[in-house]
Length: 97
Image (cartoon, rainbow, N blue to C red; front, side):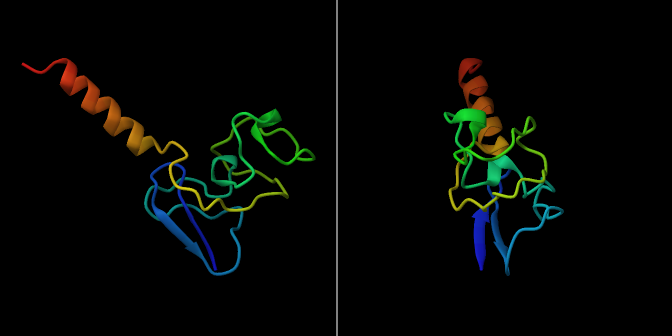
């Protein structure tokens, strides 16, 4: 059983065997088989990937053909919902009457 979280909305994900290239998040529809959901993804590494033999992928949030994909079990890779909520909170605090 593969378990992880969506990079976009943070929704919990479960897959029986493996993640396929066409799999999408049931909550937000984002691609699952992408760099931002991979355990090898690292913003500080070369090409933002810890796997030295991987080819460069320019669009990190879209599906790709990387052979090294492994679903990350980490939550909080910077989901869009969390960022939007935080930005809204800061704006409300700024313009409070």
